[in-house]
Image (cartoon, rainbow, N blue to C red; front, side, top):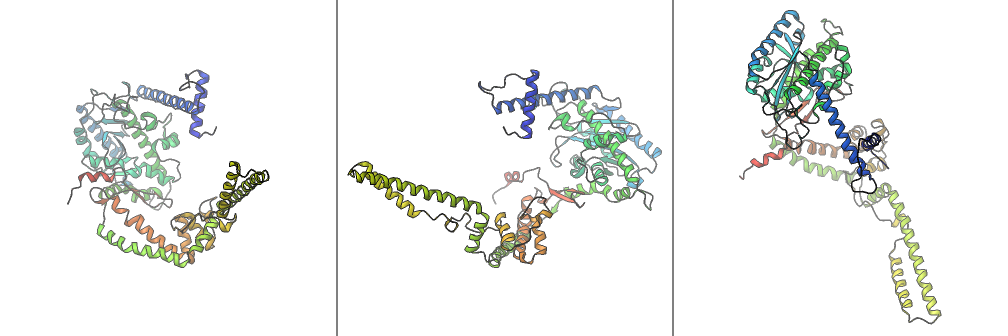
Length: 559
């Protein structure tokens, strides 16, 4: 029985559970055990094990809460918390004088927001965590947890890990008022593990203020140190490098603790411990990255990599978020004019391809015979068998007729049926085409420039362009991928008509026609930016796709 890797895992789980007596009957309705029965049992057992393992991790996390992890649940605790932040800043300015000068800030802490999701525009924050390094203490300020026990999809929540309606947490407005002055201060540096989403800076804007002094992004910093990391997530990086800066023991990911869900319905105690560990990890990683970058000497005395990061990368988080939220004004009338201009030019370019390469009926026939050689061969063999069967059937009917005529029984139904059947077979034989390539049907009746096989025939067979696919895609041949054709277009004069078509198609289908559909409700084009998002280290950008654009149709009115 063929099994996928996932199915094999489920089968092995069932085998193990049967041996230990963990599972009951696998039969869904009696009789033999089917593959579906085994896979269903395996899925159930796997879900139960994951639930059990998650419950154990949650219990251990709650049991082992460090004494320097503080989770605030009373608004009256906020002034004391802010005083601790001030104390941290005063101590850093006294004890770490000029440590962060290269980054343009006087102090540094690590922060993180927990949210209802990861959509930077529509999800809301539910709590804020911060690590104060010299004081060696972390804080979690919860203000958006919700009771979702009994709701569909949240039946896994129990009293040990669920937020309950009567549980205490802080008031959102009071938390924001308390943390805004510090987070908005340019002089006091912040480190977040944000990467391309710049999630935390977006969150602050939705809450009514802007984070300033965000001079360290530990995800981007890791990309600067080693662009070939298998994963740039915080937990994988801590698991890999944590031993270098004193982080040992199990490192639980968000999914390990909460699954593929928002932390909002979980208890403030559980989320708080997890969140404070995150900012502790983020701080330790930031310190280590800063030290690693500072090791390479330069004329200024600072590390070359650190100098580059300070001058350029440290400015990118706030810049990227500004650009993303600001968006681009698009000249829709100009795009419409371009579409009207380019569409006939594209049609002319396509006709030029037909004319330049003499794509006629003979061309199509040769292309068909080349691309469908096996189909033609199969048709010839099948036709030969049809002709042979017809001939054999005719001989059989002739034998019946001869037998009846010899016995003088030409009035029998057997005789008349044989005569009629022979006539049918003879008509069929006259209509059967000869079993050869010349008479095989066309499996392709026209050349289509967007068909990869047709394009491959034109390029590699008809024009004889040397196949260089293997230089770009190991083990592949006769590629018509855009990135390979672009190389051909630069080097092969014979492909100029195709290059013109490709240029107009890219202009129309990638930009002119697509951009209007990507506009947001404010009429602008918004994009998320990622430093080093390409193999060459350049910026990359991707359009915001979290909110369906057709939601705007409900606001349309007849004009």
